[in-house]
Image 1: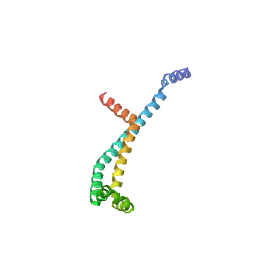
Image 2: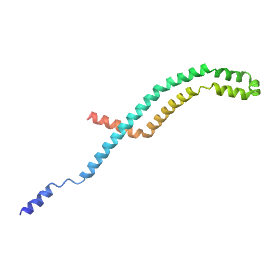
Image 3: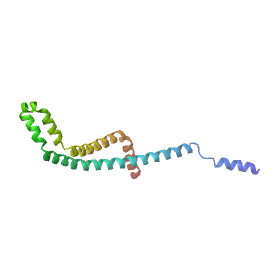
Length: 141
């Protein structure tokens, strides 16, 4: 008789069907939300840094272009095209020597980070929007 009660009590405590799948699904959903949250934080950080750095790097580039005298060489080559043709190698070397390499490098890096961040956003926007909308639904409920 005691064995019968043990068997009946074991059947009463049997977990509902599909419980394991629901637990695994909930764990995966939580992991996806964490990844989305981290991705959103990284995206926003990179975007803010690149958007703040781009105007400063552009102003550095403009000031270096103005102080380098490269406009003088380009305008001389455009105004006196025959002189430019006769001494094109000297003109090209003078323009390359006066080129503001540091300003170009800094501006290129900041624009590159901005474009990379926007590409990352467009590529991963489904994950980001799902995270944002899930958070709004959770807050509203």
